Image (cartoon, protein in one colour):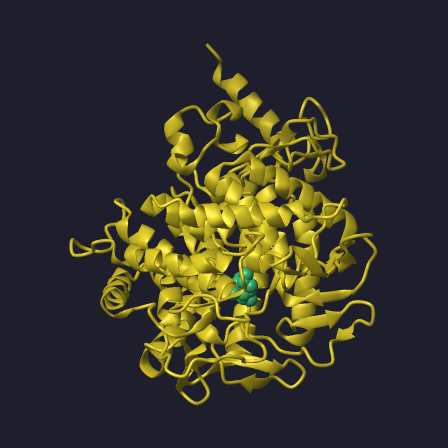
Length: 579
Ligand code: DMJ
């Protein structure tokens, strides 16, 4: 037995080696509860923002598509989305309650099941797609089809019981009806869909054959989910055929252009980047891999991702380049590009994500919000595209980075974004877009993605309880879709239990969320940190093989969840409770 004097000697020795032990633990605890209280406060502020936008929409615009917050009026904008020249506008179209559809998943995340249920039943009884309206396939897919499919899944989730017995899959029926109305758009010699289709009459005579890469390469999540839910394979097949065709049109550098012709499969605009016209194409490759577990999507994503980093990236910035030569074309930052760090988090490239995110945030701070286009070579605003239409991309990336690192700095970023939105865009009748970031002159439009994305990601940044024990990915419009093993042909590496060192049972794998697992599929890439082929893309080994360290810089990034490891008080790299 150890003598009391010996115990005392050991305690004294311990305190000599670790003099700050009790102090550190206590202050870490304190800062933990301070942060929790702060997150709670901030999430309540975002909740108020959402309801200010939503209630005003319901009051002045519903069941039309979007709210005009300055005049407290409405706009039936579904047929205007992507229609820059406002051509072929319908005469009799009276809206599809677009902002309500876009709000449904946000209402669930905010825990407002009553309002969700009300919305579901209103749509079930009143919404019809048998309308003479020419719509943009991409926009209608991500906003309407994605909103309905996601809401249907949430409504029928047995653990939630959000909607009572009278729900008989009406939202899915609506989604299926809409999906069928999309199909004529795919009837082209190449399988690449027209950008435009009339919901009642199909593709118009003499319809333009020009479309964009994102327009035909970002349909697979919503249409794939629709096929899985209805058992009708046509939706997924059409989207997959288009995606494969698009991929086959890549250059030898694995780059794609921005616009193309669906009739002959020729590129129109050879210059491209990660912003407008292309953005969600990349996003959907990695997310389709996560959702459907197909290796094919991962292989496409991996080649495309490497090409982006090689030809578009310049330090933290991404310029555009010619797909044929890889030569830089336009040196511009566009606000849509700010989604990219979020995608990098999903793949585990946290350091690169953090670096770019900081630059986007620098520009946000410079103007108070993120301008649509900024000329990198002149360090100035684009002469005409000075607007900020309440876009979500920067806060979306901030949310992903906070999830990956738990670094409170991202919360501060979120807080400052929230404060800017309240300061510059909040008006009595909702939230207005900014026409010119130099004058902060407002524009009479509250875009539906403010409800489906901007408020949602801000809220999730401060309160992610919705994600606990759930396995969701978010579509490009912010609508959650569950990662289900029954939808997987083959589980991504990150989900195969035997690949996990610390996950002991199948049960734990099922309960872990896609977000908390960071999804780090195996790669054969060396990211400059000496990863071995087959190792996770994000893995950065600790500097010493025995994992001993003097400070955090000696520690790497954990391969199983892509979180940064830190140096413990005892001098070992690991992941600690209060990181
Ligand atoms: C949203 O409709 C989607 O995120 C889309 O992919 C592009 N960006 C807008 C919001 O900025």
